[in-house]
Length: 381
Image (cartoon, rainbow, N blue to C red; front, side, top):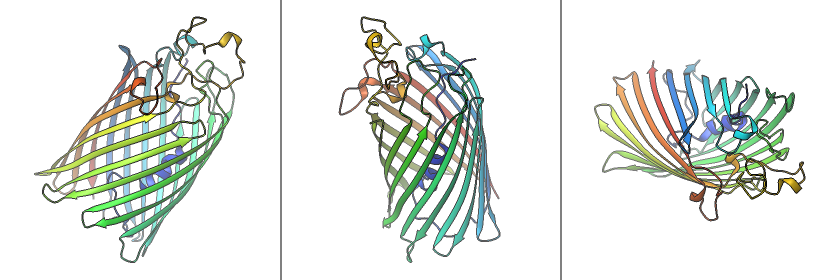
């Protein structure tokens, strides 16, 4: 079996993101949760490219949060992903990696200790696939001002991944990452809360996609992220707007901007709706190439391949290309009594090379369309 699936997101970055990137920005409470909860969720993802069905994913998960011994809380999540489909058109189809089937199992666990004006959280995560295993540890903390209007956050996380592709291009390769985070959350007015988060990740090891021909990337990657968030409560409607801007840069020379917004509107009777819109644009990595016909060999070969150094840095991975994307979604939430909550969310995603802002995109990139459906059930106790 061959596969061209995307490598899993770095667990170190995921653990740190969980420290601050909450659905609603708020000043951190220095008190443990007063009740526990268990959530069951299911995600269904499908995308297509140039009229072809491509990737399909099914992902059930279960999450538990519980207070323990007054000043402690624990939380954990288990997820199972079933992914199948084909590679992006022209990017790997000719390489023989045009079909994939895989299962991923992942889990994370965190313990939090609450103090009078702060918290300390230790976390661990594990993810396994038939050709990729990732382990991560993290330590996050918060400190609040005396009036609880300002909260500073900090964190550090590290991960170690093992890569063993089934085509044996490499055997027992590894990748290591170290991430640090610093942030501040501030109550600006009675109706406004703002947040600034900075993250730095250093990675070393194997970054290639072993299922793509001519994929030869640097063995180190330095990533920087700045996130600004602002929540505003609207007195006249009882709703809340959530706006955010994210800037990303790395040593692959990718530069990306994300602008997103959502609006939470209670409707009465336990109902609420959450429309959302997200705009994204990124510049291509300096070694990315569009595998389009150039009068010599054609796709998936790099332009000028016949006379090029076979060891040069290059990649046809469309995730490294220059493109723009739009995501639109709608979430409906229903609270049933005091203990149950049901939510359903539908999103549509479209990505195009000519939607890249500020500079030209990647003209050889075929448009990508995706649909995401999520449903969740939460029980509190």
